[in-house]
Image (cartoon, rainbow, N blue to C red):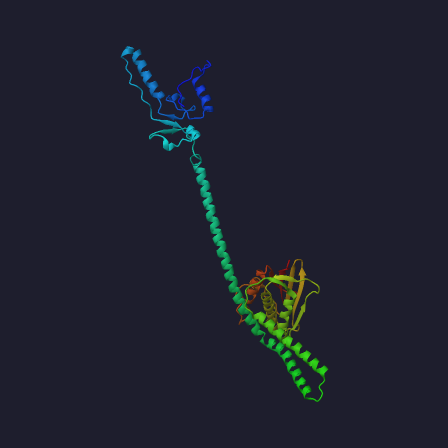
Length: 392
C-alpha cells in the first residue's frame, strides 16, 4: 500500500493524518510505503522520501528572500529530489523483508541492538569465566587421572616390595617351617614302616591297619596344609578385597611362628573372643603379612635382651565397628624419641635391617582403611595396635 494523506474518510469523519496511519498500520495485511518523511516511524516501511529538513531549509530560505524585498515571482526554487532511501527495521522484520533486497546505500534505522551489542562486556565476561572454569575442570580431571595412575603404580611397587618382604620373613621361618613339615612326614614314615612289618606277618590285624592308614591320611593333610599356607604367603597376586575371617587368618600366621618362638624359648600366646564376628574386607595375604612382620619384630626384640619373662601375646577383640589386634611383647620397648618415626621408611634399629617392614605394615593397614599405632606398655615392652573396619 502507498500512503499519501487522509484528512476525511468516506463517511465524512475527520482524521488526524498520523492517527489514521497508525490505525491503518495496526490492521494492514501488506507493507505501507510513503514519500513523506514526516510519516516515517509511524507504520511505513520507508524508501526514497522527501527530506523534511531539506524542505524546511528551502522554505525558510524563500521566506527570508521575500521578506527581504524580493518579489515572490522572482524567487525560483529547484525541485526537491528524494533523499537517500531509509527503512524502518521494525517494519522490515514485521513483513519479512530481507535487507539484501534494499537498494545500495539504504539506511536502516530503529534497529534493535542484538544481545551482543547490548551486553557485549557482560557476555564477554561470562564467556571468559566459562572458559576459565572449563580450563580448571580439564586440569583437575587431568590431575585426577594422573593421580590415579600414580596410585596404581605406587600400589604395584608396594605389592612388589611387600612380596620381597614376605620372602625375607619366610626365610627367617625356614627352620620353623621345616620342623612343622618334619613332624607329619616323620609320622607318615613311622606308620608306613609299621604297616610294612605288619603285612609281613602271617595274619595282620586289619583294624590296626585301618588306624595306621587313617593316621597317614591325617599327617598327609597336615603337611599339605603347611605347604598350602606357605604357597599362599609367597604367592604374588594383585591387591584383592574380599570378606575374610580375621581370626582365622591370624591363627594361620601363629602356626607359622609357633616353632620359631619355641626355638628361642619365647612363649607365644593367642586369644580371640569366641562367638564374636571379626569379618573384615581385605586381602588375606597382605593382612597376614602385617601380623607376620609384627610378631617377628616382637620375637627379635625379646631375643636381643635377657629377661625373665619372655612372652609375645596376640589379643583380638571387637571395638565398636572395628576389629582390633594387639601385639605385645616383654622386650625393651621403643625409645620415646622413635615413637613418632617408627613407621617411616628406612627407619630401623637392627644393624642388618632395611627399615621397610613397619612402613609396609602401615601402608597395608591404611590401604584397608585401618589404623596402626605403637606405644610402650606400663609393665615394659612394646605394644602395636591394629584397627580395621568390620565388613558391612
